[in-house]
Length: 330
Picture (cartoon, rainbow, N blue to C red):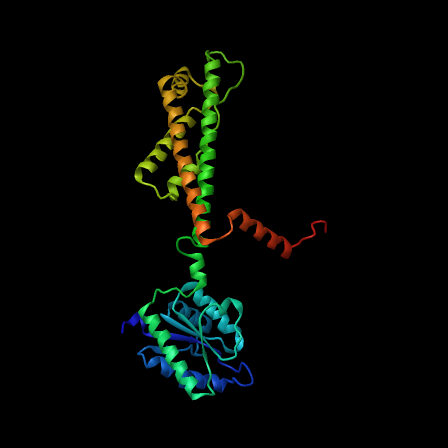
């Protein structure tokens, strides 16, 4: 058997959890039932030992790294439920057991649980067989999902993936708005220059508009869109245009004649047309990406049968306002 599936960490009460389930009962339960049954399959069964070290750190390490974890939910021990939550936040391959008659909470009852009856020998044999089947299934199918937490927050169509795509949508939306503003600024500058044909004697201060590129720079640094090199080379070209535009940012009437001629190139003739066309092509590209993201996002929401993002936000807002009410007049 490979080393990666050779251990099973057992989480269960240590001390008395009810009149019937004393510390002696739990020790006997582990030593004479669970441990030998599991180790018949060649899997080492163990629980945390109370030795001189940080026991909580050791428990968490075992919960996260152990190939298989077995949790006994009898008597609703708070520590066991907390440890089960930690385990299912990181890994699959978790088995839950409980004594017959244990009423499991809703969020745990949906998961298959093996029940045992220690007062009947036949039921004990049946429990052992079921437990062995579960252990063998964990060994043969280590990637088989059994954690609703991991299923909900990871993978395609999960809540995590939807929220990640929604974040990308908002970033692209900001990028589009930034580009639209730069196009508008370029148009305004072109109109201003066409009206003011003589820059040698301007009686008042006139300044070129402000060029924005933070969203574009963020895209180039993080590359959050799954696009090819051609797309990002286009983004770099647009950024160079903006940087060149910024060089013409001082007050027009303060520029030298040579600087004025150089500045006018970006707004007049063929160069001015190329600038305008470049911005428009970049805007069209972003709008296409934006539409594709919206379509993919809606498809994922429909497939998972989740509420729309607007509805989810509305629900969260209602919960927040119902639980957290402040009197700002105090």
